Length: 198
Image 1 (tube, rainbow, N blue to C red):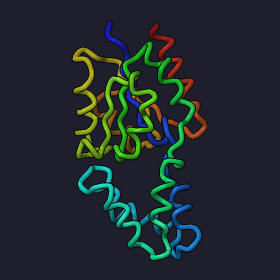
Image 2: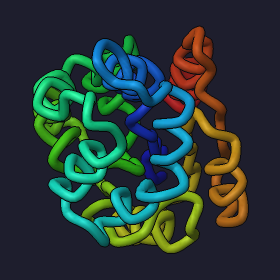
Image 3: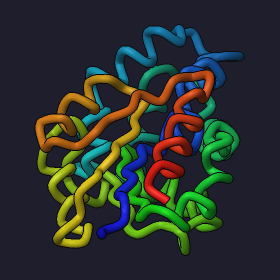
């Protein structure tokens, strides 16, 4: 019998998303641009290119500086890591890896999250980060990349993400899905599923 395959998003599942706190901090102090304006401009202007690796990380910081002369880009860059904190599930990875192959699938920059994943890297079967993959969720291509890294006979695939739009794509591939709620109730649901296959 093949081991269960557990596919986890990173932002909002293992690490905090850097929004909205990151954007609020960047827009604070001397900036005249509001948090909402800055976040909306990010989504409109640069998000997909940044997440898919079509632009380098430096282009994001350059873009950020162009949004308002009052933005302290150096402070924002230095403070990025403090907005990517470990969530409780991060510490469950070693135990979960005893019972399932764990794969990470994230719309993110590898420069920002790969170093933060090092403490659990030895417990992870594969890591797929959109900036390296060249595509991002919910594009089916990135899910297929993850599937190609699983054992050929792998069945019983559970995908956990904090965005419903990303779960819909996984369902098209007949993966089971679970929405990661902010309260973390999903963690207990994963553990119950893993106990059921022991």
